[in-house]
Image (cartoon, rainbow, N blue to C red):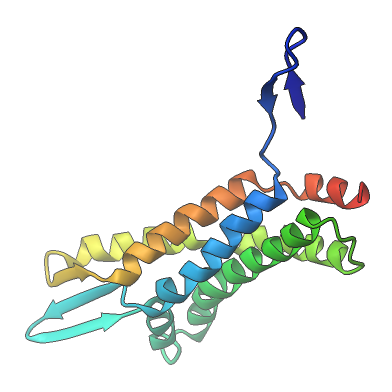
Amino acid sequence: MLAKCIRCDRVIYKNSWCDPAGFMALCLTALIITIPAFNLPLITIHLLGITEETNLIQGALMMINIAPIVSFVVIFCAVIAPTLLILSIAISSAYLTFKIKAPFLPKIFKITRLLVHWSMLEVYMVSLMVAMFKLKNYADLHLGAGFYFFVVLLIINMTIIANYSNHQYWEKYQNL
């Protein structure tokens, strides 16, 4: 949507909520940030002379013997679904940006619509903050570099999800 001044023909308002080029840039940034966010240590815990540091994937895999279902859900909702969501939006945004009508894009739109509901980085962040709050009285906690990358990834992911419109992508695809 574009609103122009009647007298001077200048742009007053431009709807950029569903700009595929902008989403492609955000998604590529998020995909780059996922590597350190998932692999660098989130927190370091020092308790009774023992120091442990863990990243997101190690933390989920440590629970696999105790609670395999919970471990799978954490890995799926905090790693797999967000990464696939960002990747699917990046692919569809790239094709729409370059105005290429690929026959597989409708399937990607459907996958994206499903993944939006399963990408739960914010839930993982809340649970991490609760765990840190409870542990601070018993152990020394230090935030690792992975934590800061994870926060940036969370902000970018929330921006993408809040502004992405599957309906508008379908319309852009049909108008190619």
